Length: 353
Image (cartoon, rainbow, N blue to C red):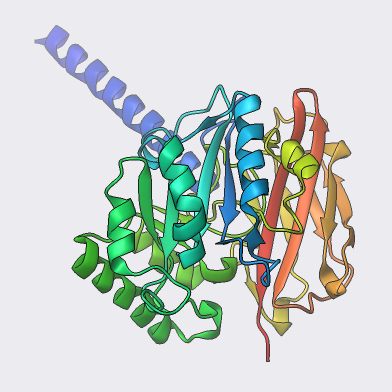
């Protein structure tokens, strides 16, 4: 009888210890939105819009350049990642760099110029569609979207209904816009995509939380390399256009590694007059060496200059010089580390009058 009580007592202690250990890990991971530091080669997402629409150089790329960019990726022995694999293996560090092609807006020039090339070479990509302009002049129609969606290397993503500046909408109108896009996708394709792309890369914390309830991943328009510690609803992408599509630059960026961090403040990337400029703090993993060699550049005052940084062990405080004037404030940081160049970027959506 005594032995039985002792065994029950020991079993209870072990059970409590296991529960304590489990919840400690879960709570810690949830608190920091992290797993652990790893030699993750990452997934580099590249963002395109228009093809051979030369009167829009800020969102256009020439097919000749696009094909050369694809060749550079192949010559670097880097692999294009299918979105099903991206979803399945997001939680796992990548031993080899993956490249993710993303196309925003579903312009007709994509269907006419780039789609035949991607189809012939079976290169996986995701097409983000705003439902309101579908079928209008300059955009793909639903038959064309359904045509490419049938291919197993193609994924369709949600890009809102209106493609308006969503941070300018009150929360009710924002929800109405997202819900309308979801309804249309379900009517036209039979499902709502699990991937979302913020129009112009702009969002508030309140909007991001709503997106979390309806999607599995969301992409912004800030630069950086995706690692398994990144917030699934603030995923970075490198924009490619005529200005930023230079082949030398392209070759550099596709070899970048993720600059991993534990957390970043402020959590809300939407700033108003009350917190412009924001107080920004980036906490890195203790295993990340050479943090003191970090270089950042930011565009407050509508002028790109080197950022003022203060280092405190594994934390970096960013001291912005003045307010962000334009509706999108950016900061990009790089670190020439032992295993190569690492990069991260952030975008603030600035309330405008």
